[in-house]
Length: 188
Image 1 (cartoon, rainbow, N blue to C red):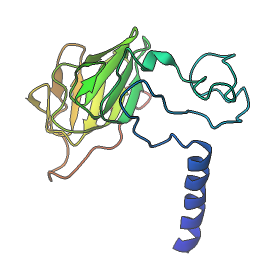
Image 2 (spheres, rainbow, N blue to C red):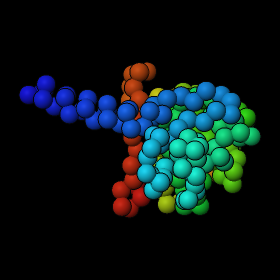
Image 3 (cartoon, rainbow, N blue to C red):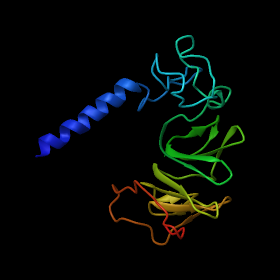
Image 4 (cartoon, rainbow, N blue to C red):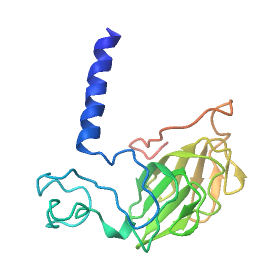
């Protein structure tokens, strides 16, 4: 039975990799941009950029939103989690040291065309992010400190500083929080 379940999953992964070759790749530093849609894709296959952009046949990067490229160098590592707050700010978590040319330890905010750090960030990977109704960013991952404060794999950013969520989660150093979600009442 297990063999029959593995085949559809592999077929789906191959189809995704064929249609969207940039998925899962780490972009090289510099002005080069990864393709977000394959050549020959229909004009309405918008992934990023503005509606009515030039066709991919004449410009393979036509659907890339240039606000994420130079002079904004972006993030120097891998992003594992994204979240958006009510004001439209984008939060990224992962394994990185730089965002937008400035120091940002594993978590950063994109707002009004620029990246900024969330305080001192975390000491290790951020794998999950969610923003609550009050605009607080909740992060999960394999970190044990956030903003220099002990926070065992879960922490909260209030816009100015990090704080732990209770006693944290897990007992082994190899554990990781890989997902966070809020219920209808805004509870984690």
